[in-house]
Length: 348
Image 1 (cartoon, helix red, strand yellow):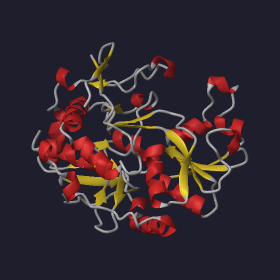
Image 2 (image 1 turned 30 degrees about the vertical axis):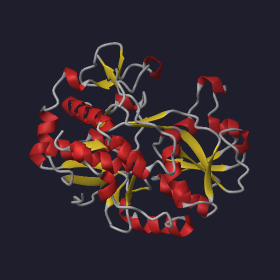
Image 3 (image 1 turned 90 degrees about the vertical axis):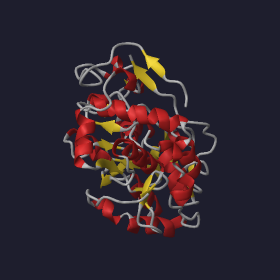
């Protein structure tokens, strides 16, 4: 795997001091992430379990029939098996010919993808995976062009080939697999509420009545709040709970809204919320996760060889110690108790 087994993330990854927290920490991160308002960042030069197979044939060219409803999607996490097709086709050759991997990322999600103010470099759990993929395909983890992509623009950037892939805490679900292709899941999170100390909100329930909840545009959190499930009597959760929903381009902006008194809670993946709580000890998660959010690497539907290549890389990443090393370094303090990565699911 081009030297993947020899990575020493704990020795080379930039470390952000735990003292960098609170309102001052949020302001510091906001300043450090000012470049997130643009899209292009210059290239930077810095340094499991057995698979579960889903029944049915691999769908060629796309992951789901776009005419099918969500009810026909039973296992969106099942991805292309690297053992059943090319991992060195046109998409992989395109990346090699370009001499760089173009990846859509976040640079303001602490612990996942953020610009470390101490070094000026991107760092985090997602960034570790970006480097592993670049190392395997190009033989050099620094041959990456990072593009900052707001939550709502991720799919468009992939479909128009402005990026080779997006690695940005992106949930695999039935709606999205009609639009982009996903790797197998590399992490599992869930939507949960983040509130300040003293908040009357106890969870995703009637304690939200009259409160203002902030979430990101294009996020699964927004879909959960504003969708109209059959069991809700035709009303969205926001309507049933009497919630005012406000949206922002990036989840960190929700934390700032709460700090400024413009929102009462943040609704986001608990993985991202843990990073925000790590920045500000006055914030904490309440209730239980109300969704299951498997994160995958998102790619163009036509780039099947690249999907298989990333899945092959992830197979090694899970088993050679790299996934656990990254988790231990970035996430274990704020998301303890995770014993390993999710098992990959493949289509026959």
